[in-house]
Length: 193
Image (cartoon, rainbow, N blue to C red; front, side):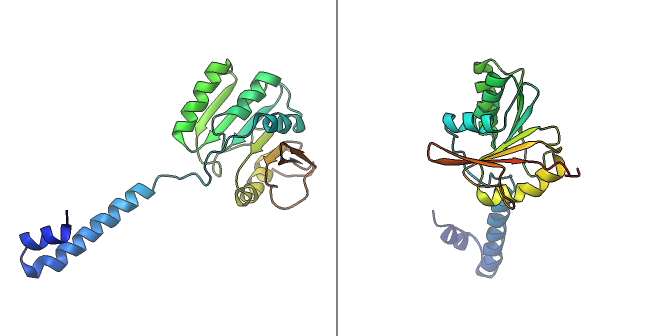
C-alpha cells in the first residue's frame, strides 16, 4: 500500500507536510529501537575440533585451570577442556541462542557441573578468575582485548588465539594445524593487575 497516497486522501493539504514528518520520525524511532540491542562483532564460525585440541594443549590446561572462551559459540572449547582435562570453564557469548545451545551441549556431554555459559559482552565481563583465555575473533577484536586481558589476568595466565594474533608483541608459541594458525601468549611475570 502506498502510504503517501493514503495520507494525502485522508488529510487536508495544509497538514500533509506535518504528517510526513511525523511518519519519518516514527520510522526513525522504530529503527533506533531495533538497533539498541548489542550485536556480535563477528558471526559464529565453529572452531575445528583438531584446532580446539591444539589450543588447549598449547595452554597446557589441567584440572586446576579455569578456562574462559570469549565468543564461545556452541561451547565446544570449554566443554572439551572439562571433558579432557577436568578444568572448569566459562563461555562468554553475546548471542542468546548460542548460549542456550552451549548449555544443552554441556548437558549432553555430561559436564554441565563444570562449565557455565553467560550471555555478556566480552569487552565488559570480568575475566580475572581465568587462568586460560581462548579467543577466535577478528584480528581487530583480539587487539582490542589485549589491554583488558593484561590488566585483569594474573601473571602466568595463558591466552590462546585462533587464526589471528592478539595485537602487539610476539606470541610465546605459534602452531599451524589444519591450515589454521594458533597463537599462545603468557601474561608476563611483571604484569601488574
